[in-house]
Image 1 (spheres, rainbow, N blue to C red):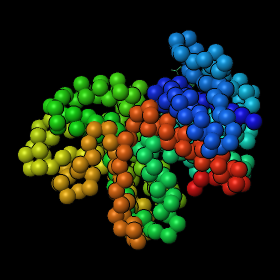
Image 2: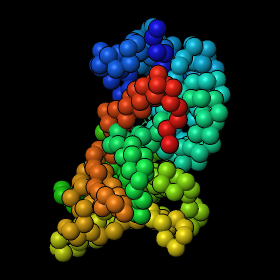
Image 3: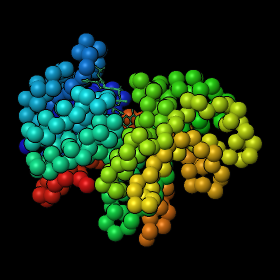
Image 4: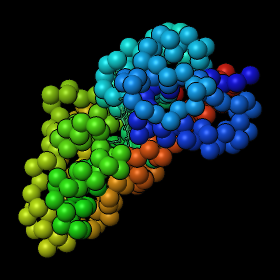
Length: 326
Ligand SMILES: NC(=O)C1=CN([C@@H]2O[C@H](COP(=O)(O)OP(=O)(O)OC[C@H]3O[C@@H](n4cnc5c(N)ncnc54)[C@H](OP(=O)(O)O)[C@@H]3O)[C@@H](O)[C@H]2O)C=CC1
Ligand SMILES: N[C@@H](CC=O)C(=O)O
């Protein structure tokens, strides 16, 4: 039998997913024992020209996609809605879901997981947070015994790319943002990237995983990189420091505290050397000590890789009759 995938979105990430399924078909089939096929792709603008094989249904009607008898939905569209409605509907019809949509997941992740558990399916969300760099997987693994006291992270590829270009090459903010958009790092509307909200949603997903709750959103200080001045970057460089956009979450005084802001770091900080589109997290644990994990924070290949890894894990678990990611 073939495993049938319904893909939501054919932008940077959606295209990356199709490419990996095509280029790694043999490997995936060896892992799952069955061939894998994308049977339908959901898009917003049907008239856009795309190079999608004619065997794949291209539609803007989600119900039509569901009629394709799919086993799993890979969701790579943008924003809270209609993403949440589609994921919910898919789960209610017994389909697994993998999402890269950090905003939707920060708002509705908990509800989706509970619903998935009721319907004996799974939800994967690795790519919501630092693309395909396995931050979620690593935290899930650590949580078995360790207590994670604090996580500090550079969580937005676009912001780190821009700050690095401004510092290393003296490129303007505007030009660096343009390059980040051309490379597929920035969102089509980059407001959330440069104002810190993209990192905020990722941090909320980490919070939910670590502490089973999120801080009150109004209590979280969120500042983006849009007001960082080239002279501040230069002044930091003169003192051998780098300005980095750092998101922090910790358990303090019986509650979760979080903040997101540009901070000047010395070379002794583990996030100091993380440049360009690379992101990184420092995980402070009680037993394993501080651990640093870094990798690409954005881009087609990395993000699609995270989604495919989730997809494989879900089917391996379902063969073993285990459901539900943490
Ligand atoms: N780019 C990256 O590096 C990363 C992205 N993500 C997340 O992945 C998701 C996709 O990102 P990305 O591929 O960059 O985005 P793009 O803007 O490149 O592509 C978005 C795709 O979604 C489709 N789409 C948007 N809204 C709707 C809708 N209402 N109904 C149906 N289709 C819709 C668009 O259709 P059409 O083509 O017709 O316009 C397009 O194909 C986002 O949630 C993003 O935050 C996560 C990690 C990294
Ligand atoms: N726009 C995001 C994409 C990945 O989540 C970023 O730049 O980090």
